Length: 445
Ligand code: GAP
Image 1 (cartoon, rainbow, N blue to C red):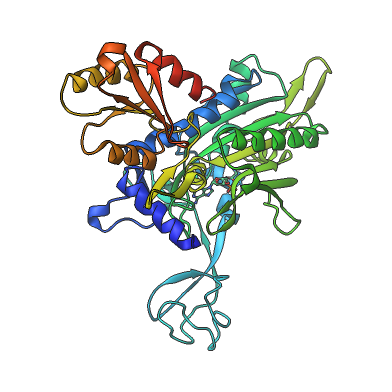
Image 2 (tube, helix red, strand yellow):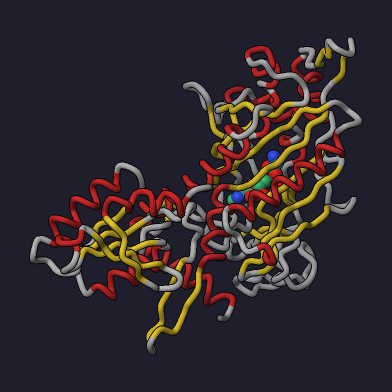
């Protein structure tokens, strides 16, 4: 399948089945902002729940946090975002479009007469590159003035650093320990795109692990291993995952070492998560800018130090897109194309479809009862419209792993057919066993 075609098909399926819609669509949309529909919100919630379970519930050395999006403006001076979170941009004086200075479509050198605008084609109309900060600004309080500026956070990490002592003092944790958080972040990206891959409003799943200096590289390696394992555990194809090590020129200002987990999207290998050794940069800067001591006192060793931080930072939207791209397949079944989202059952937004074979002979009533019983345990979907084959196809596109059909034998034998999405095989299962049947197949999910 051609690469662009696959993305186009994915965007179209996402809208058709209610995964993702363009924001404010009836007004023509808002650039690179997306809304999650009924299936999308379930899928993304499953991603976040799996992350939370692995990072917080399954471990006893990580605490959860939900810090506010708006923070004291000094936070972003300390973090380096006010001075350094910038992209070099050029403007076309003719068509008023704006581009990153390194946009591969630009011919010639911006600012020089030979430079050509990639949109309107004018020559000599591109300005010299200027630095543009990616943080969204807004005003706090009734007055729109410089002193009232606050930023929409461009990462959730800073909310963790400034709360590190609060968490330490209110929990029973000792270094080494971590703080995990899931939340919205905002970046005024200049070249957003590829659907929900790079957006201006997105959710991050970030964990900051505080360690004794000198043990940081050991923890860094452990976290690399655990994070890669997590991506495999949600069902991503292992051969489409790889590591990318940041070379000296690529390292962010805070990083001592950094690796990205990359996935092979239809548009190439791209980062889905970063694992960073941030050294004592963050706590050091916040100590300096706030004037508050942020050192840790190790009672057992009777020593004080500023912990080093190992960060794992993944995008919930990006992982959701990765799951959709990874799951998408087309098959030829008896001369017709079957579109399937082959999600791992644990991550699938709907676990089972429930259908009466026909709308008579008591089948709808029985199916409705089964549907309401199962709904207490799992997200399930009732469908009685159209031929059974079409109902199966709709569930295949939604990525639903099981389809339960009430047929002519159900009333007498108290059994139904359960059709497996991938193999398309059917087996008879007792109604009383359905909860256990589905539950055992989505465990881990
Ligand atoms: N605290 C470190 C940090 O924010 P990052 O590499 O800039 O590091 C981490 O971002 C992750 O957040 C990325 O791997 C990606 O999954 C997600 N992310 C970053 N920018 C994004 C955007 N504009 N749209 C969607 N996800 C984004």
